[in-house]
Length: 425
Figure 1: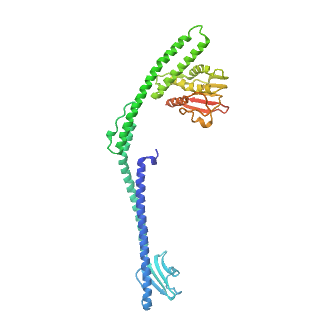
Figure 2 (figure 1 turned 30 degrees about the vertical axis):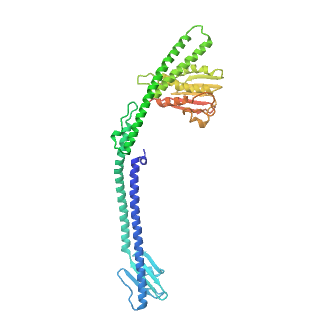
Figure 3 (figure 1 turned 90 degrees about the vertical axis):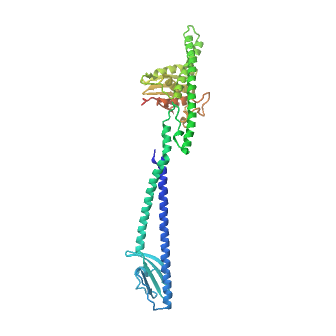
């Protein structure tokens, strides 16, 4: 999980951004206000000094030029400003801020027709103080940001502790046992309300799961008995001599349907229980033997269609899994090929850890291939009966046993359906 996607990290980041933004805005407003007030105060003071001096000078031409430690004044005739420092000499009338390597000054200049007055103030110390203030405020912003980060870490830990505790307790839930009540461990707050709601949901879900398990176990048990009876009776009838061929064909169809129903029932029971039905003592199944049996069962379904159904083995493929599961997964692929192939060939190839079912049927539009494993999905061009569950069941079984299934259109026409078996690590 990436750092930014954690809820605690987002809380810490929010504190940090808020603290930095707030302190930064405070520092910026302080600088702007300080600069504005200083400029206004100095500019107005100098302008007033110039105006007052000119007024006094007009009343008393013999008055001395104003002179202070940091304020200097110059009075000259228009166009004769040699006594004025060069930095101020060519400035127009008004209040200015000028700088050079020696320092920084604020200058108020008045240029009348009969005289020019320059009043300057050295503000170098004030500029240096402003720079120090800027650095000080930057430091304050950094300190407040650090404090915000620390406060965010502490606060997020306190805020997220009950949530993390709830997640930890939830992770211990086991579908095979009744979940422990959560609300008793939390205060009567939002987290406690969430825990109480989860308790109600978990209790309801547990009852549903138990009822579903009991139902599937009962159905499986009840179905196995009549299917066994049907299979046994069919086998006895098939062993009779001088049995008419038409009746034998019908009995074979009954036997095939009973076998297929039994395999499907066992496979679905594994899916419901999410159990593989294998252990370290389970024997491996020869996949090609199962495929040959399936070919025998599906051959009559071709009927009078000009379709050739065959199987061949490149090399031996053995899989540790219930025979019924292997038969259901491969049988669905063969059944689909037989159903939708109206002419040509259906080849089942076993080898290199893969079972391939290659048909010469119409194929599937490319935009529909990714949807074939969805429940109840049937293509737009599909006609005839079908629930659209076969491939969905095959996909779920493959996921349970960590097998890989692929369906794609063949370049020469038709479909390629393949199941790749991998060792369960």
